[in-house]
Length: 146
View: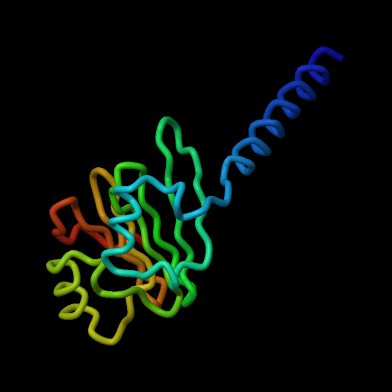
């Protein structure tokens, strides 16, 4: 009986945590996005290209996701640090560091980059054939993740 009660309490807490984490992603108007993030986005895109914006609290930081008319998803943190870009039809080359772009062009010439993610210690690239390439923070190839 005690185990069943303990299980139901844990299950309830897990459900509440899951619901609260999904509920943290909120739509937001462009004017409420921090100025530094607005500036970073407007360097490569226009307001007219932005279809939808969400704000999500990630630990102690906020992350802003911009969904563009062409299906591209771009994420920045509140300090305007670029985090991620995705588009199943291929992302713009402006989002990739030059050395990573050159490596991909040379090593995988017939592929398209569909996702790029920059973390504090590494960078990941996904190609249209679902291959994931991992680079160190300086852009040196490390390994294939598949």
